[in-house]
Length: 229
Image (cartoon, rainbow, N blue to C red; front, side, top):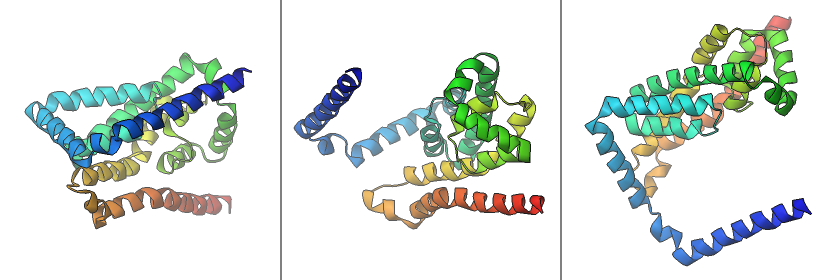
């Protein structure tokens, strides 16, 4: 009965969203030009007090990551769009690693029982990976996101890995992927019309996002096979 009530509730929400969308003609309300105007207003605001907003964004990124909120990817794209490539890369690289380590510590000392129960299937796989490859397994997971990063942060808190080792490997392992996503944010911010979405730089950035995890998995398998032999 409760399951049926839940389905009815979410069905009504979905139906309401459709009706409201057609009634208000959402395409006229949310246009590319309005999104671009909002972005330009934000850019002007940031340029007026650049270091202040850089610091606020940094702290907010650390908090979002520390509390395992699954919106870090969006914030990474925003960092590139709002601050540029190199500042955005530095911001995200350190904020994500620091936030991940806080999340790791919360899991280890405050949420152990809950995490162990909630993510027991991930824990078994990760423990086997650590037994086989040690810190190299964490590096592989950071380079090729098989599991969402927030799950890695939480589950690794239950392993025997040392905190400093977790931070250093995370800092190194997330750097390349961070650079790719920050660059994607920069390229998206430079779009001046919908037609430019098909530009070479945009396509190249999105292609890198798709190809990179596959490439890392291929390299990891080669290294693993060589170690086994």
